[in-house]
Image 1 (cartoon, one colour):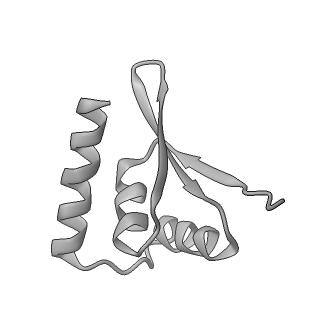
Image 2 (cartoon, helix red, strand yellow):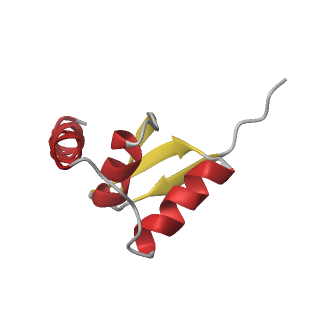
Length: 78
């Protein structure tokens, strides 16, 4: 039995960086009137998160824009 840990964020920008770097959104949960983006946690994901907050994350502008649009659409639909 594999134990999967998850990490969550309310930050749509971090979620978009994660998606455009190949991390798959595993769930979208309601948190009051907000949404909570859920990803499978790993050491690599935590490094990406650290790079994001330390302004060192690299993004492809067009992929990032697409990820933002897709995540916004999910938050409106879900």
